[in-house]
Image (cartoon, rainbow over all chains, first blue to last red; front, top):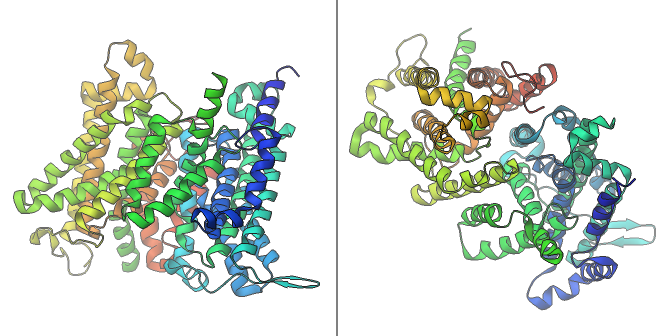
Length: 329
Length: 288
């Protein structure tokens, strides 16, 4: 028990909002709930908030594996993109039910992650990364080459968000209602991650990251832990991808591309990958930068590339990691 | 039969590009312990350097100088930033080279334009050698010869020079090599440069065959990762073999069912990981 307590404390503490504590979490939730009200006041727009939620959810999903279990996945765009394609294809070919479309995307991406996870779970470190990124690219080529189904290089553009139908009527998902639609799924995804991390399973995952050998000696099968973490992480990232397809009413092979996988990793590192909310902070910086840079420069690749290098060289702990450290010191 | 030969030979040429890339990546992976995502960027630059150099020094001059120019740039990157991350979580060196890859692609695009450029090769290399096997052009044979010569040189360096012995020893145990008085900072820099020079050479050869585009490196680096996994980590010959196998497989598949020509190499990778997780010639237990 005494060995377990510090980990427990650490994960518990890190689950609170960026400000820390229950009060911080409540304030954070209030800010998210009121976002469509205050975003226009600071010269922004609701869809930007929605995009932030999508990237944050994808990053937090990846971070379960990357930051808490220690599996270097550089291929999570695959599950994100499969989530997007699953939802898009369902709406385009099968029917207008939004819930079914989301479920289809989550299942497609999640099951793919579960299957591929079984192939990589035994590998470590950079080899793990190389296999995940190579497999990720497989789905990119399937999407590009299966023209008749996916629209090939041009992407899938024949679907759009449908109204939500209730027994008593229906709700058209314009910008603001759609934000709440995404916020609902964001909260669900975050709750699942929080619940996993605070369960014995989650503690074992952190243990696998810190000292896999010791865990093996205790009789825990580390590769299975990696696999479970990979699968859950894939399901959550696929959920984010599904939301992304609905946000844009469009999906293309770029949503599966390895560059996007790299962006997800930097989102985690930028915010602080040892911190539950780190990827949220990273996603906020990333989304704002993308929004700002795309209107001022054509050299977006250099901007983001430079950011990769600066973060790695000067802020390897990420923003929240740095803040926490300062607080302790 | 002819279709099969045509596909296989086409694939073999592409396979040699993969093999050269995978060799360089594998060298760097082994000693520097870095997945060099920027490898494709350096490769592309090698091709474009040659394109720019041809009017001044001719094709043959460019063929020799451009790999060194790419290698020099690689050396600068290694000395400047990559070496700061040795010994830290490998995640960071991967992110660094990832960022570098994005920057290199952007630089190429801004300098030479987003459209593809034709890379002129000498006329006598461009003529078919045989009437029946029309695909057997001089240039393709040339690619095979140059790739084999470069690989032969690399293995000769690794086998017979002091530098090569140190690199091989460092792959096995870098700490011991350091304690024997070898300057491992120099060793890692030299090894990285060697890897990038191979990428530069691949860029020139691929430019002559496929044309130059800013994204050519990106499209060749993924199969090179697959080549390393199929061939097995820790084995240079494995990486080379892996590159040739997936090249031929993609080429042959492309003849019979073109949409699957890329996907097939990933299926091969999945099969290898299922049946022989360490790869064809990989060391047992490495990265497990």
